Length: 272
Image 1 (cartoon, rainbow, N blue to C red):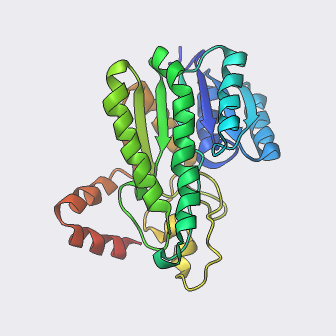
Image 2: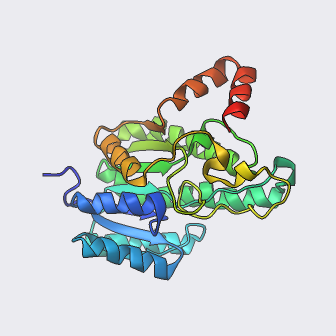
């Protein structure tokens, strides 16, 4: 029997990209999946695709930046399935903009989605997850470990997600909560989108290199298949790992950042 058989999971940003792949993988392994996203029609279509393959899903339109939507999302989850065993905080977006063109308002808006929305969902889910020794998966990015050029406020928001994930592990891990920070590089996609499946905003800004408008802002690494990343994330949950980085070789850069920031900056310039 699958580890996920009979468990209930909420996945935000689940209508496309990595979020959809994770929801699909959970359903294929016997989990009951609550799929949340802002777009009603794409969300319903995504849920129907999984249901057509025999998965049990519930589509709940929700904006994670709205507290009322978040509360309704988890209330409907418990009303329908009676429990919650996993939350995947996947909703978010990237941007393309030079750092001095990125305004305080840009930082505020992106932080509200990428971090504060994640905090809202985590707080709402925590009582159930703690009671069931459940899983909390926060989708970060390679940008959660190393900043890059031309992506505006994005790295600052993802660094914050990494710090929040560590705090959760330190404080709530001993109480039974498993917290996984997943940091993928560019996800394979038909059109340029960010790691969470949304089109990168801010790409309309002029003066950026053409490479900056590519997935991952032009990072020189092979795009990842969302299905493979989803499978690795679920396997890491089963083993209760604390962190995943895709590709694993990127860890070498992150170690270098601590030893020699100047050398690490040189490598980032050369590889993006």
